[in-house]
Image (cartoon, rainbow, N blue to C red):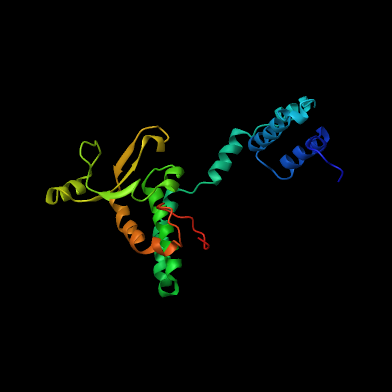
Length: 227
């Protein structure tokens, strides 16, 4: 009750009890817990107001935290994952659900379900990192246009057949410039055909039903009832 400064709160005695409680009762992950304590240690060490304080004990306590075993980390990681076969079936289950509910759904509720169906279908079709999915913008990263000249891009056979009958045919494509990829290389490709029907339905009918006011331009939107 009488604590008036950070150094009065962060004492060796209080930290020892806090570490024991966190690891033994809360069962926190030791690695992330140690990282958090290290940030607190740095905040104290580099604050001019506390430079006269001896914090050697703090660093020692952090170093004594035993890391999680490899088997524990692997088990936790496995518990976060679902088999691909399970995830692959989710879009079909969402579609069945919205068809089952039918007229019971409002326009906006239906739009949310189509959004989720497209998102999961996208995830099991394209190996995109989460940042590219979040930041994919219509017209910038995702667009419908003829194939650009002088660009080396794999064109599937079904698209080649369409070009034979119509040289100016337009196709859904995606592109991320060098600064938008983890490898620093431009990525450009045609959108897999299996995504196109639901994408066009979503863009024409359902995405406008989700939007309220400002349009950020992102393909996938934050599903907030207050959006």
